[in-house]
Length: 429
Image (tube, rainbow, N blue to C red):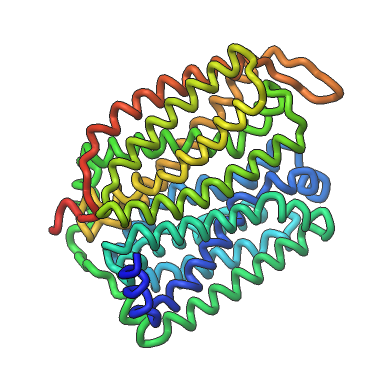
């Protein structure tokens, strides 16, 4: 690793370009996780919305973010990060600053959609810049840094944001967050207006005639589809546990208090952040091998879900549930290997498109899996009201995890057919 730090130090001038873009990405991740969940009640009261319309605020951001990823990946491959983020950052800042100032429902949804489009440019541009500024051999470590910074923004969007909105009006807190994003955006514009910024953001592969051809070739890659399937499956299961059903399950089936369950969910993000950085460094130390971590993540997912099924069936103690949840976070922290492999299964010219496709399917997987969770609880939950709280039966959760186990086993088998890229593109054309 000493060689890695020597190389980073030798490139410290271009590292300064990396900082504002990474911070801007962190604020976009904050917007993705903080709204509407942490201020659900305030939004209902202040905006006179019912629960369904409040959820549309989050959906407007996530849907447009995920669906735009493939197209944005093409734009980054075609025009480079500087041009894409210059426009995307402007859209993002406009959306997040406008949102807390609005009362009209249609305008609020529009602002969130605009912010979602802008946020979609940050992650993919960082992938391209990490590769260009630091080289392919250091790429996994730098992407680990990117993920940790993103998760840090998401972490701030949970308990810290909830505490701030309890002390100050939610509009003021979100306006301050929007202005902070604007500051990072201006910093980015200044950094990339320098000679180093302009030189480093020229697209590595400019092919104006084969965009559609290369995209079709990317979609025809069976190994890419296998990687996307396995990675999306693992990501969607973890994300739904973390943001949709996890806290409720710990309360209903494990008998934990609401506060204790919330603390476990908060801890998942911290664990995932730590493992992300460790796994990124580990791939660098293991000669950029990707597949061992991919097999580890898929296998751990099967083990976790199997233990969860046993815990639900036999009513095991709460610490068993907590251990499984922490293990889900560990598995999620190693998913960086799937993202790296998705980029490397093609050529340098389609790297960002492949990453966009992978990222898009990740969040579409969440969109598809989340309603399935609600359906299982409604269909099999046999809800009982205790002290004003709806409690669903362990049997409903057990049926849900049995279905997830079938999917996880399929993914654990499929992952063995994904080739090892060792940090190198499989095509150079």
